[in-house]
Image 1 (cartoon, rainbow, N blue to C red):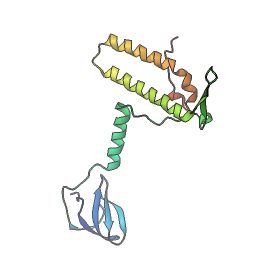
Image 2: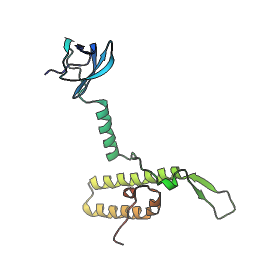
Image 3: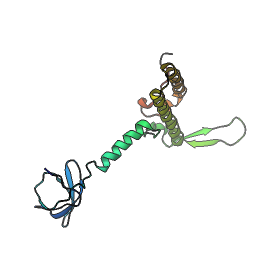
Image 4: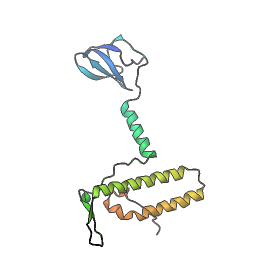
Length: 173
């Protein structure tokens, strides 16, 4: 079976005359004169009026977007969306100085976002260390520092909705 390219003209028994505007692995997207945009199976029954070849987008934009998103999440410091615990939503952090000066209020959502960004950047650093050309002893030494950093940040675990998002330090101590 030959795949029609974008711009091919067809006559469908139900929808009438149309032009192929996109091709996926299973469907033609066809804009019909009388019925607008419809998706039809590649092996549907229709008459080919004019075939255009080599104009096929075999990977959809959605597939490319999904793949790119997965790559960015894996290899960059792009943050994933991490939910804050419900009881903290809309709250604020008040920094009260020991002197007789004005308090500083910070929306807890802003603070939480910064904490998750720190966590994500530490994870990226960890991945880069593990993928580096450092010898194993140096990698282990740096990994111990990272573990201690996570341990220092466990105080903020109360902000996370899901325990699998928690900071985890050295469990043996």
